[in-house]
Length: 159
Image (cartoon, rainbow, N blue to C red; front, side, top):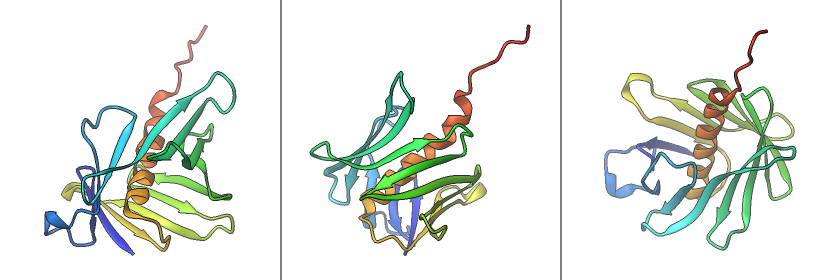
């Protein structure tokens, strides 16, 4: 399956008709907590970051409307990968470069690939995972969290 994401909206591969929006992130976009709306503009999921004083210090959560965790992501210390857990399966979300994110299963098979369109803007999503559009958009939010991980590396002072 192919999708296109632009301005926080998930479309089928051809975004020429805005009425074909399958899911969208509710504004404002600058909060870490994201409400994901389905194609009928109804809240379906919430993506958020959970902080802790214990390891893992940070987790990404994708919650349904009842607050049940659907996906849980734990970023690795290298700031380029996260382990994702969904229905007792483990996946690896990795940032190959700032424009490419991949989700692989436990056997190393590529299941989800997100690629930036460069100067045209937007993102292309190619996947063989049969998930609802709002979950795919939730995984997109996880890529944004992962991309920000490298910006939150604490400064080390030289003595």
